[in-house]
Length: 612
Image 1 (cartoon, rainbow, N blue to C red):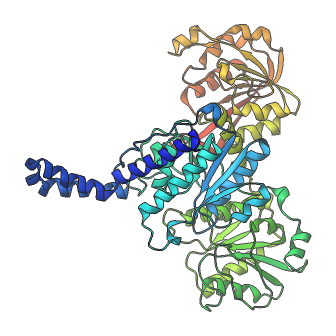
Image 2 (image 1 turned 90 degrees about the horizontal axis):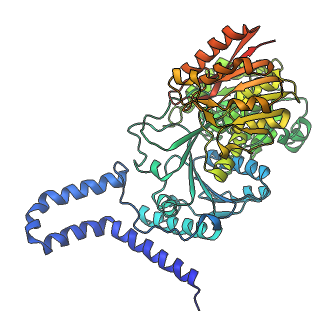
Image 3 (image 1 turned 45 degrees about the vertical axis):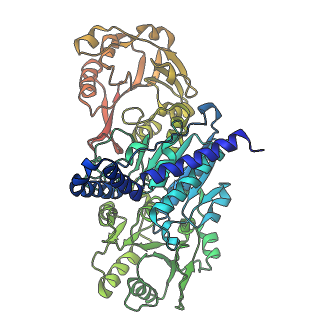
């Protein structure tokens, strides 16, 4: 006896098959001709309407116009029936970029919430890499791995397998990491109205790009991990919420092997210079290839050993050269303390791992990577003093670059450049909050990492802090400080271990003068201590207005510091001026954020005034 739920799944599967057939090119063209046969007056018009339909279908296939919407919407799973589960879908690129970003995020989300289940659904063949993290996986080979399988057939297969994955695990959230969404995937996620759909995509959307125009609208949230240089906002209009993060790196410093252990494991001498080489192009046995020229230039120095990185996705290297060692592992960054320097192409993951873990680098940027501007990325390392770039590679330029690189060994101090927050740490908190509440910590809702770092540097742990406006940054502050939080929105009350005061928005004469809605109920001042080390002005939201605080400066508690967030905006800039006049501060610190940007690409700023 077939159960009711099984029968519903069978019916839904048949409905999806019918829907795909009805939207197929052959059926739509055939139906158009049959319709003309049934209505003879249409037949003479076929000379115009048929080419027009063919043109329309072509544009749909190219993603220039939206494809027909899915006819059957499956919503058999209610929100209450959904599990504390996330399905992550990293695509299979030329390397491990998509996979590594998803794994970096997955491991940190699981660490923060041990009850969270993360399921991978991927075209990547390296599934064994997930086992140490306890992450199960569904695998589907990419379309290029099948013989004589049309793209439409592969997308139908993808739709069915992903739908079964959703039906089985009932996730609350789906995260896709890839440059181009698959049509079968879009059909599968569009069938659920309760599933939160997130697209992690490095780089912004450009006008005229080959991304299907209706792809973005299938998602609730777009994540843009930042790069070494500021990226301008998307030129493609869309109304999907956007979240940025610092660059994402898989390992933390405490996960790297120490120098002695790493060298022993790679069978390297403890006293020699060791250079790690990871170049995507060229074969080691081609005497004129870049990798061969590089290795020979390195081993020409008698005290240098070379560790040549092999990709788990590529063929094994056949090499027999003195002092050249091969490593075929994942992630190779676990061995970084064994190395004195590195030579690499400058891909996203390798670049940011190298910067984070403090290796001097020589870059051979790939100039033919399409959307990935490796040259611009690597040039940032030159400006910061830890990298050198060779654009025109030949035997002479490679030898000179290697000579310069080896000269840096022993004189290089990695602490000379600032290490920014790992984007995976930030997103682990942001996405869990979004998953639980549907709220997105976005521009203006959270103190930038640079501002939080300033607080940790200048405010002694255990001190009392008062914040007007609660948010994601409250969680970080509450771990090290005695925190009081003034908040008007009940949904934000209790998000962390703070002393919360719910204060409604009331009329305020200065707010009215400035065309704002009002300010917090001044009764709050009777519920807080008389003295704080820091007061943070980060609320009410800009849509309500903050100038009403000027009507209560005489009621403010004593404090050493006052910080005004978002002081890059006109209203907050004026607040800084008014506070300066009222308090005559001893010093004023301006804190600019490198990776927390406005939609126009400008940097967010906080201003701290020392009062006593």
